[in-house]
Length: 153
Image (cartoon, rainbow, N blue to C red; front, side):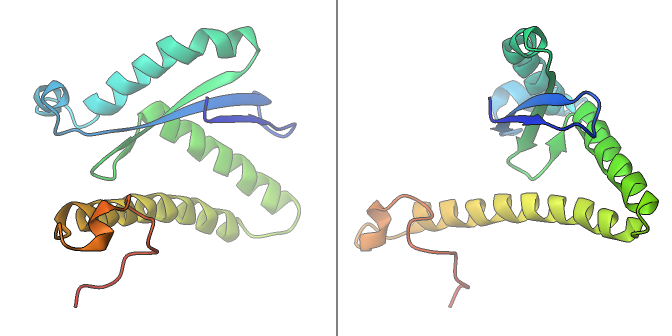
């Protein structure tokens, strides 16, 4: 399990989530992707639910599968709907306390910007790692061990 959270302001009050990153270009997913852009998210979510759902249910926790594709997609739709409901709830709380819903909308947008930035950064680091010359001492380091990616000269 990648996340376990309890909150008295949300229903259900206890959640667990497990995340995975999948590549839609693998042969297993490629055929399904021809028919549906959400197939990879649905397939991986079903696997996660079979694996972690019963244990979460036994602990009275709501289980959420989080699936990212290597091409920066996120799903499944049920997870996106749950995230939207959390932010709608936060917006209601903000309005009831005299704050602006705008701050909550910005936080929702920022969440996805950070997720996409993380994927792009790791893609860039992996490409640097894979394309370094064997004579380059950094070619034997794991991606991300020598600081943030730099612009190409």
